[in-house]
Amino acid sequence: MPSNALHRQIADAIRADILSGALRPGTPAPSENELAAQFSTTRNTVRKGLALLKAEGLLVSEQGKRTSVRPRPKVRLLSTGANHRSHRARGLPAFNGEVLAQGRRPDQRLLEVLHVPAPQEIAERLEVDEGTTVLVRRRLFMVDDEPMQLCDGYYPLDLVAGTAIEEKRKIRGGAHLVIEDPDGPIRRRIVRFVEDLELRMPTPAEINDLRVPPGVPVARTLRTAYDSSGAAVEVLDSVLPGDRHAFRYVIDVP
Figure 1 (cartoon, rainbow, N blue to C red):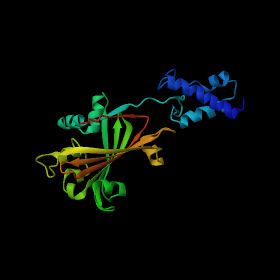
Figure 2 (figure 1 turned 90 degrees about the vertical axis):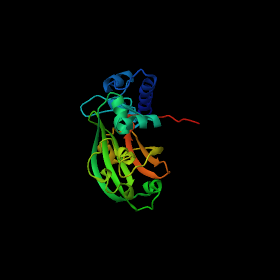
Figure 3 (figure 1 turned 90 degrees about the horizontal axis):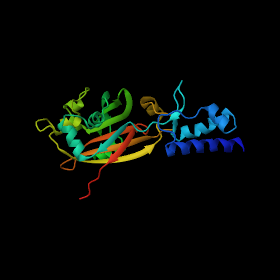
Figure 4 (figure 1 turned 45 degrees about the vertical axis):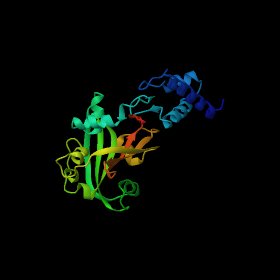
């Protein structure tokens, strides 16, 4: 059998074992020597087969370690109104609340707080003209010291100017606590979220910042928060590695 066909046969066999559960997430894949003997071929042909599975995101490899089956997502994000209010009542940002509920350790690292011209996608959601000056808070979310999410939060400048949201420091309880504080300067109640989700391959910067393995896509979400008057008060532009997250949306139909 030609080697170019054989390396696909090797990939097909391992893929079938992964999808059937015979090879479980996090376990080592068969070694190159084992596969070369099993298929009566060379290690070079085996490497081509393994490369296909890495490109599909089914296998991952790290320097100095054996190639293994890609682990299952480590953090489950559950989006419901009840969850949002539950976390807010405890004085927790939504991400921290979800991670703590799963017995993990969250950390939000504030990278920048800037005044920037609103990009088109953000301007449309905040209902301002493209290029209008808005505030952005750029953060890196960590779980157990592993990067999990890049999150840029955009806010209308006339809404947050002079508040804690404009300051370059962490906000205890998150920005929503400031927005909804009945005794604070903004006093808006968030009643609706609209989330747009797309899947794509990561940029070089995202690969570096989030330590994304080869072949693993990222999810990009744009979540817009609306107050009781229907005005947009926040847009979160987030990028999450596909090998570390599972999403669940609960939709109540009246």
